Amino acid sequence: MAALESLGFGPFFAAQMERLGRTDLVPARIASEGRGQYRLRGCRAPLAEVRGRMHVELGPLGWPVVGDWVAVADDDERAIIHQVLERRTAMTRRAAGSESDVQVIAANLDLVMVVTSANRDFNVRRLERYLAAVWNSGAEPVVVLNKIDLESTVEAMVEEIGAVAIGVPVVRTSALTGAGLDEVRQALAPGRTVGLVGSSGVGKSSIINALVGRELQAVQDLRRDDRGRHTTTRREFIELAAGGILIDTPGMRELGLADDTVGLAHLFADIVEIAAGCHFRDCEHRGEPGCAVAAAVESGALDGARLASYHKLQREIAAAERRRDPVLGSNAKRRWKSIHKAARDLARHDPRRQP
Ligand code: GDP
Ligand code: ZN
Image (tube, rainbow, N blue to C red):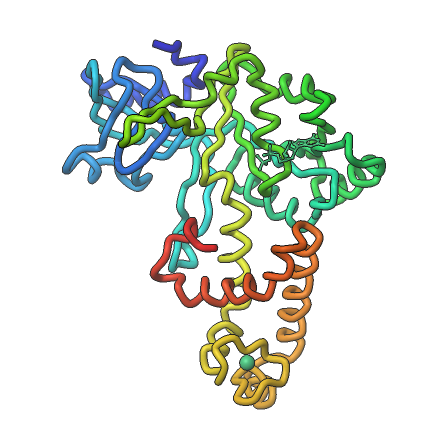
């Protein structure tokens, strides 16, 4: 059984346990969740579930997420979760179909590394968005500028980052050569929980593997699939031998993606709504016949400047996509349409599953 403190337990949670006043419950931390089943650390039971009416008692925090501290009735095999303890920090995103509802992705992170790469992927606007999400969570952000081995203009980038990430430390790394990784290690201390966000391909897995080093085996869970084959799945809650916990969940990974899609749909919700009346389903509002958006500008119902800014953003996204991935870039138009679709489907779909 891992010591609670090394898992991040402290006075904030201890006080809550005390207030519960239930001697039959013990604290434990959620290491992963899936289909109503939770992996636990810090108590005897490796697994837990929220049973029956219990989830009513979970209160306003709702269902537990990775990183949550919960009060459980412990058991040798399967504990029962009675209560989610109040979170110190929470990474969130807007829930589907609502302006105000937020969905918690991971809880009780102390630090979030916003990983970006020094090659062609570098994008300050995207970085800004990630930083906003981290600040919003209550965790401390640090920018990790990875792949410095590929780029000679690193200092100019650090300066650019400094302009949007005021007061945020910037660590220059190369997961390939190992440069700067000691500085990242210093951010990890026993009991500290560190998350990683950043676009796909910037090197998050490579950094984790480098940090884990010889523990690499431990990063992967060996499981038997239905046909009895061994399959490996990525670990989401990685306890480092030197102390510290890394949280790397699909939800954290998809944060920017989902936020881009849903966020932009929200940003231009008025246009998206008007566009539902366009004759062509894939209308781009650039002079196509039967364009409801053009008609709205004509009638004064929609500000022409707003449409211009919509088109400008559309171009920026297309350009960024082309830089990032030429094949994807040619699909930028399709991606923009997926933003329209995202807006239309907002009420029906989980943003996590949107393209
Ligand atoms: P993730 O999607 O953020 O987890 O990114 P990965 O860790 O899978 O890395 C994406 C690609 O970038 C892989 O081919 C890595 O080998 C490569 N990569 C990661 N870090 C570095 C680095 O510091 N330098 C170089 N040159 N390549 C890197
Ligand atoms: Zn139109």
